[in-house]
Length: 413
Image (cartoon, rainbow, N blue to C red; front, side, top):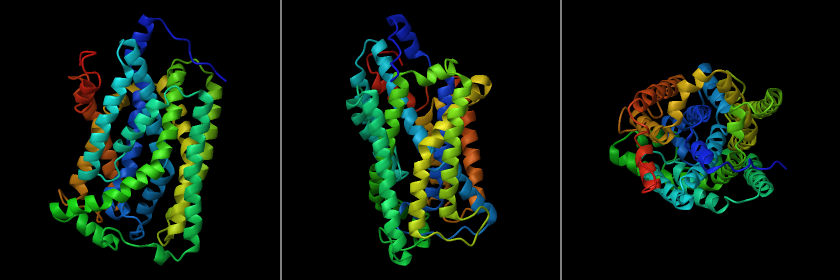
């Protein structure tokens, strides 16, 4: 079993605690693209927030390829990577607080309480599929587990992930044997995709009622399915921070050929499973006459989830190697990674204005290719705005008050 890196002197610890790693920030920016690529469909196809409500099949080859590609590259992977980086940030923030001679426990409690509040507001008023509430709640659990042994953390992470995958496989098996029409039941008084889109794109009152109606089921799904997955990734990130894995990787302490081999195994395994999952959900690439049953959807979700850790690991290794060899690329992406809270919530605001009745009302109408263009356009805009903002300010618009609350009285903001 590897041993943690020896504790540095007080001066070294303070310097390391304050030193940001551009490659890690750049990795956050890429994860942000993946989160956007997945979340946008809950705005563009609002019926996805309602359990059992089925949308119309994709009617164009180009549109089907967009959904297929998003499934292969991002679904079940970006969330794992984002959660891993959250656990890593916890470990780095803990070291930062210790180096400042302050109370890391108090800092963590304040931060997680703020995330819970932001998550509640975000989930109720913008996006029912919010993850901040779950992150805040699980953060308090991570705080209790901060001294967990390496072996226990690895076993716990593996067990959590396995339980969720097996649960989805069992549900998929039951659904595959059931009549698909009976499985497709409405929710919150809505019995189909057209009604869901009409409510989501209607008046402000209709939209708000839709949000509130969808929120309980969406929250339950996040806590029951995504929650254990996030905690497993938190624990992995905690260990990576404890052993300074990403710092050492970017500093060239690991042999490149071993990293490449590990990343390749992860990518090949993950992509193989992801392609299988995408075929279960969307059919062969370019096919438009395929309609997945409810059981096939659940089976695809389980396989996609199983692919997540492998593919996310491959992504992280190869991207960090890329950033190490091409620091300019990391420099382009890193500012957005320093403002992930602002950008995550900002994405929801922009998407709500584009797809809901609060703005243009594109929900249920925009073609898949259009949705893909929105993803790239919004992400690139966020990259540009991050550079402009951080030229004048040290922290993002939402990161600044969060840090002021978190580190109140212990450091200048």
